[in-house]
Structures are given as C-alpha cells and as structure tokens.
Image (cartoon, rainbow, N blue to C red; front, side):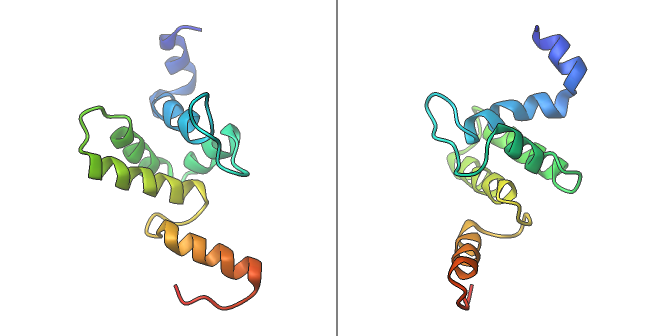
Length: 109
C-alpha cells in the first residue's frame, strides 16, 4: 500500500505515530516493552484523552532536528502514556507504584 493511501485511510495523526509505535513496541533493533505489543501501544497512545499530547510528543521524537534533552523528555513522557498513566507522572513514580502494588507495602513517591 502506498503512503498516500495509508494516510488517506488512517489519517495524518495515526500515520505520524506509527514509527514511534513501531520503535517502542519492538522492532529489529529494539526490544519490546514487557506486556506491551504494537496494538497495545497504539491503543494507549490513541485514547481520546491522550491523542493530542501523544501526537505532539511523537512529533518531537520523530524530528531529526530536535535537541537531545527535548527528545529524551518527549520519549520519557511517551513511555508514561504507554504505561497508562497521566501525562504529569514520571517513570520513577510509575516504578514505585508498580513495586508498591506488587509487594503490597506502602511507597512514599
């Protein structure tokens, strides 16, 4: 299928996120996130409440001219969204919350 047809069928927002979904959910050079396949990652990033924020982050990650600190921060925020949290959370908070949930002990994050 040619790119123009893909854009026409899926829309610009979706097609611009496909490289990010592919890279974060596993490809030849990148291991996948445990428990998050391509469909799951796409679904997390395309929920109505996250779509515009995820699109903006995907634009930064996909931009060759983006400054490295901006690219890293956008990538971390995409990971937070993929793990199903709010855009203001951090990966450290999510790790702590996951550990607290799995070990049933309180966590002061």
